Length: 224
Image (cartoon, rainbow, N blue to C red; front, side, top):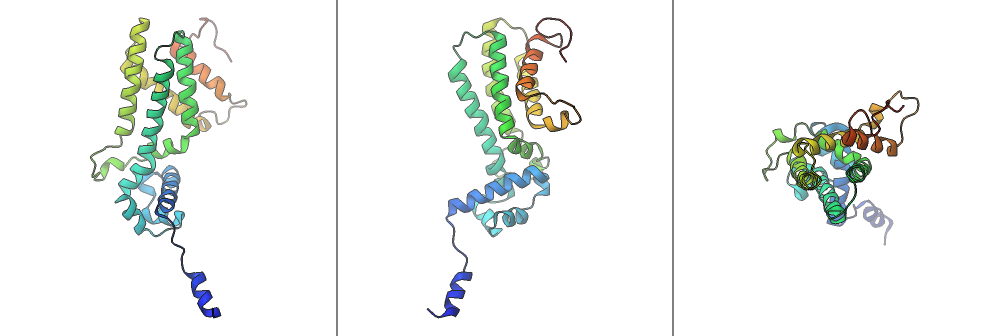
């Protein structure tokens, strides 16, 4: 083969499988949505970061909203659904104490959210998502609404069985919000703290706060 033909073939772009292209776009979208928010991450930047043509975003996902849903909303829903499925299968008939059950719930939720914090930051940062036309009619709030409804059903059932009088609608969302913020924003919250607490300590203190209130399990002085 003449040298000129080899050079032409070498410069010719390699066609990548559709699944590979889709995966590259999802990874780049998730990272840039987390770093810049929904409004700040353009489809052109996402395509460039993924190393593909921008037109492929519209071919695979329809539009930017579809890309955001596939990269951020659907994975978050799947994470919470898997968490609740696993939790219900493990603890629905368990005889654990309220403190131990709450502690296990908070520890597991905190670990899961901390591991996937980039995904959650991208979801929280998408403050203009609802302003765009979503062809499927799903609002950003649905990413939280359905998982929280499942968590509330489980919590309501457990609280009723244990004779607990708190409002499960508020309790599950307040606890969920506390765990989410401590898992995702811990770098901010403990900035300047000489000895930041371990993940285990954070989860244990959140458990004590939920179960016993600010006075703690022994009703004594605050632990330092």
